[in-house]
Image 1 (cartoon, rainbow, N blue to C red):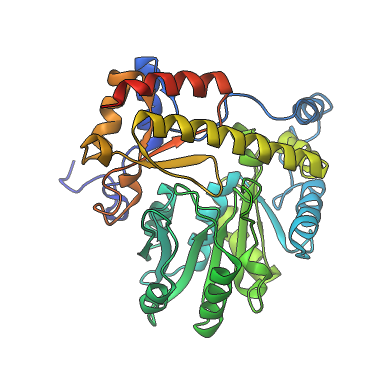
Image 2: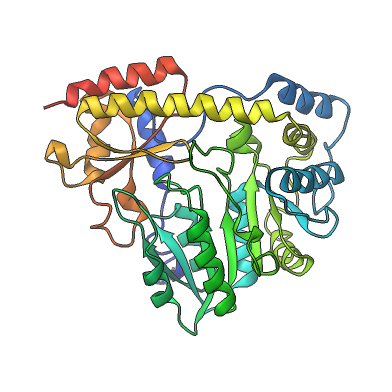
Length: 389
């Protein structure tokens, strides 16, 4: 064989994801996994039953329609109207995907040309960098800095160049838990209109926002519906992350463009689960309120324990992650700290430094998830006490 590298240069340096690496470490060491963001209990039983009924009755066991089953597309449109006041045509403005990750990949592959620039909040979910690279575009980070992780909107304005094609926004933000305010969203919308930019919004944590913060889609601001691709999914909201059911909403032109790329990725997926997610999106308001309240209580439980263990804690406004700082322990390398943590106290976390281009900005930040049973969180907190100086 030639000496040419097998992995193309666009993906050079993007080996195994940190989530796979740290989850494997948790399994190998028998540690409590507070790294990867998946719940350790299933979602509503009636929704699981709806999926089982769909399988047993033969609904969705063969290829579903390319855009998604009509029942789910209608439920997504109803959800956008019910919670956000956004009207979408389920036949032309909704596309079902294999989770939000595929939706993001399809959107970026469809909308970007080589040489385009994409501005994204840093730290960013790791698939962002890979998808931008696969599209041949260039990522331009807008760094969110502790302790507030608020975006510097003057800096955002300065980053926009004639090559800027798209803004990639994540709010509620993983991993920091920052939720954009109405005032921040209004400025971002004005910049997008002024510079004729497309926007892709990752809103998978839209129902995981803690009072007094609220989530408002950017597409609801003047001039934004026609230039925004909204991405969300069922996994986080309903605690069925393995089903991989996501969706895109946008204008017919935007959705058609995203579908052109999506059809050559998975084509279709999760047929029976689509029927169940349609039911889930129509659950009463009490489900969403109780789910949010329970997560907020878990956030507070873990945050209190992390503080007691000696971490500096940056309390999140949303998601189910807490970002901490390990500087109080005299530590300077989050990755090394996380590699050693299972041996030190039997807990796995994620180093935020892997989500930054500016490695110094996140050098001492470590992320923990609180979407676990109370008993698991309490045991993890107990183990982490051994780190206290």
